Length: 125
Image (cartoon, rainbow, N blue to C red; front, side):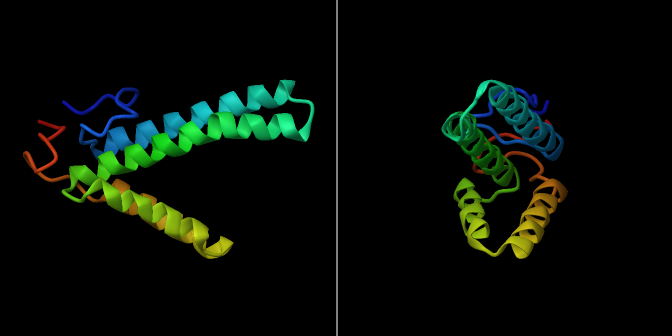
């Protein structure tokens, strides 16, 4: 059985299949958006808005990194490759959006390793 989409967001001990990765990523980003929107309703100053962005943005960045690492481990690649998002973030804006979309498509398109690999058991077994 695959890892449930709303569990193990901050874990490095699981492999995450494509469906679970997509649903988890959408849920994490939607959670950030809702929390930040609610925060903006009460923040009156630019400093208050920045505090909300940091308060909710930092855990979201950590969470999406760990979800990406879990997904990479499903097809036998080290989770450290998830740090390539930092390099993509440095690129100019039009190219950055294209690279981020391409990386997301690759993560959602490559099937995981059948059976166990060095990172754990098959999440679909």
